[in-house]
Image (cartoon, rainbow, N blue to C red; front, side, top):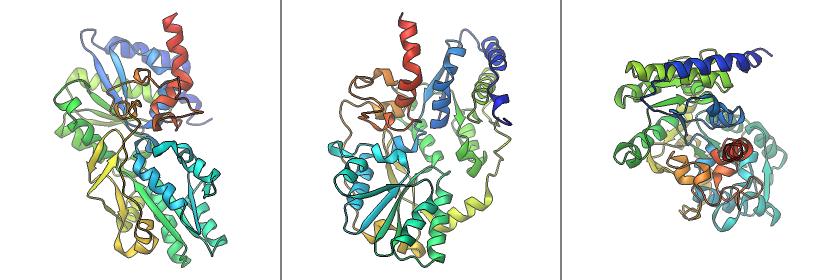
Length: 378
């Protein structure tokens, strides 16, 4: 299959692995964070860490949109779903994410709330059209990739003059989160997490392009290579980053040139800029309050803003104290460092957000990595 098979060639992967081993300085260590949950999933699924030399270490970042949403926003979505006459719809991964008191949207549905899974924002629009006597709220999450479809849905609702459709907006921005990580005490002062380079996200970059990462390369002197999600994409990105580190270069390189340009998708960016504005601050699970890292609807579109239509709670309950999702999302700890991992926290019974989504670090390691851990222990 075009653009699939040629990027999963095992012999070529071994060849790139040998090249990385030859180029990596044995006297140095290379700490590379993949920001995107899709890359985390690919690294675990294809066992890419086993192909890398021991001194090239992958650090899983906060690139899963389900994982970074704080408990307070999940509680708020459950509160919305319980309002009289409301149909709350969202993508499938969000249904099982535990809020406070171990309640989730799925459990709220079992208790009588009308919660429905949708595959696209247009499904939500159709729900509103077919239920004119109900209020349909779309629980919108995700990075720059899923923001344009939400904008299209609002445009469609405007065109159809739908009065019973609104969006609970939780769209967040990748560059702000990367800045927060690089400014965190663990990276900047304490040195407990060493970050030498980033693998830039794939889908997000198709929208925003490669230009926004140039700031990190210049200001923080961290090289970035944007990569696709196939195993050879990731391996080649690691090789390009090892080469940049060896040569003392801090540049943005684009391994995913078949889909990403420097300026991205201008039409999508223009649509988002027309409809959304920055929130002054927004909480991320694991990163805390991050300035100018999320979006809300502009005043002309207030009629479709669920937070303006209802007095949505803005509570901020803490995470389960035993759950290490926060530290894992910052790259401070690995899934196996969490006492709950694989004991009471599994994909069937997730205690934290990292175990819910397939792109979460814990779920990816549970599905693929734990077997390699067993082999190593034996």
